[in-house]
Length: 399
Image (cartoon, rainbow, N blue to C red):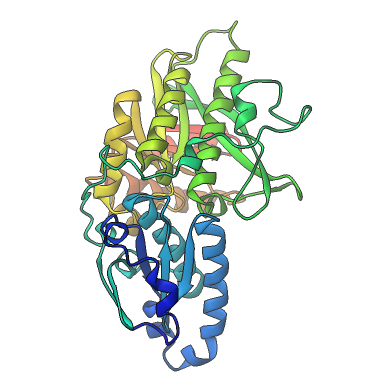
């Protein structure tokens, strides 16, 4: 049921073509209401305020959101197709649920596609997020990323980082949807095959910096950027790697380059088109090929991951999934997602015993799904040996 007085606000979105295209959705906070019980009445304003901030940041200037009932937020993003729009809703809801509940297990079933807007009520149904079915994810979805996403960001002023007329200058720095000016930096970190301790290539370790404060965004904060901004970060990351490899042109080409790309960027045709173009250019600078590392995959149904991985696989050596926390619960949902490897970072500051306990659990969970497990940021060669003994296949040194 729609709260009184909102019918006129929603009428503009009642176009059957807009609804059929999956561009209008709901996210439900019923899981938080149920968990809080009697405390909901006292906490709901806090929940609404936090959700507003998450949606304002995550939906961006091209989207519209509105709370329409005690637990439901209406979200319309006409510039995004079904998959990218619903994935953006999922990403926002996961952040809200994790903040208030400490887990996001109910996220996928709490994103609904609006199918009809009537007098005082909405009709909605479960999305592919809940069923885990790929549905119509694929090349037939021409509007999955907005026209803005395929356009480069504003060119920085002369003298700014990334300027100088290169392709990179068109993508970083840029003004994101919430007004912050961001720049993308990346370093090449050597990755070793642990069985023979031979270097197989480099991983791109990217950093997204808020220029006004020099603050570095965490991976969850990067994932919370709008779809347009995520694509800009992804393209800038690839171009940083290309520039690094070209700068080392007098040296022997590395075997491979591991490139992190966001699931949201890969879930739409225009995003894939832009990324594949740059992946091909990077692939020409390495001997074996590019490894595509898909980020922000927690909570994404395996069918949707499979669709994204399958469409980029022809242009890469292999497709890996980057996990924030490789727990058994997270890995349990990944079989059938088309991933050929899993990767994750070592937590900093662990003592030796803590490190062994963490690595044993993380690698053990990852090995349930794949034979190839890449662990980044080991603090010493001794810890590389420990990772190898526990079943990791590849690793890198450094934080």
